[in-house]
Amino acid sequence: EAGVVQSPRYKIIEKKQPVAFWCNPISGHNTLYWYRQNLGQGPELLIRYENEEAVDDSQLPKDRFSAERLKGVDSTLKIQPAELGDSAVYLCASSFFTSANNEKLFFGSGTQLSVL
Amino acid sequence: AQTVTQSQPEMSVQEAETVTLSCTYDTSESDYYLFWYKQPPSRQMILVIRQEAYKQQNATENRFSVNFQKAAKSFSLKISDSQLGDAAMYFCAYRRVKGSSNTGKLIFGQGTTLQVKP
Image (cartoon, rainbow over the protein chains, first blue to last red):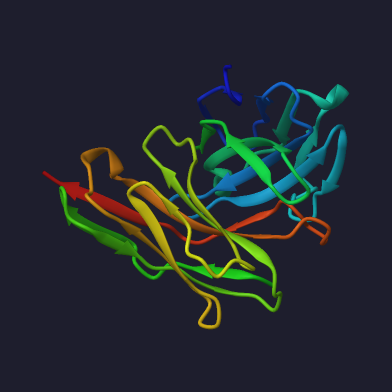
């Protein structure tokens, strides 16, 4: 199995430009997460999906960030316009529950964004 | 709000020796999960070990074990017989129990970079 696939792996853009990241979760995983990881820090949740519904987007900066998960499978995270402070690694993860509280979580390799 | 703190930005260990990474957390909840994740240069987060707060017994996975002190809100990771492949950034993380709001959200510490010397 391919695991969680993210693309692109690297992206360099100028500030004020738009950018999009794509995530293909593991087949059958209903839950999908987008995390942002600033340099030298731990990841922070941006948004969580249960199937196609965004159930936690409280930390998504909605003025410039948007996300979608059409048909409850692939997801896209967009930034428009990008700012210098958006430079970070954007990680996608997907999961399923083996029992009520036993979540198996798998991360992708992330997209490293550099805003110049 | 829950917080996770890792006070050691960097640690080093000699190959085959033992090293302990520290983590403290703050929560008002009685039941939760704690994790240690490894992040190599490939950036992919890999689960090392998982601890359920209601279990008093410390979790163990081969060379990796934890010292879970619930009253002290401490969760340290011990790596025995360190190998060169253990070199990576290690993150401590907290998650609420399913059924609570914001379930599934992992709260990470700042990370500890582990260097393994041959």
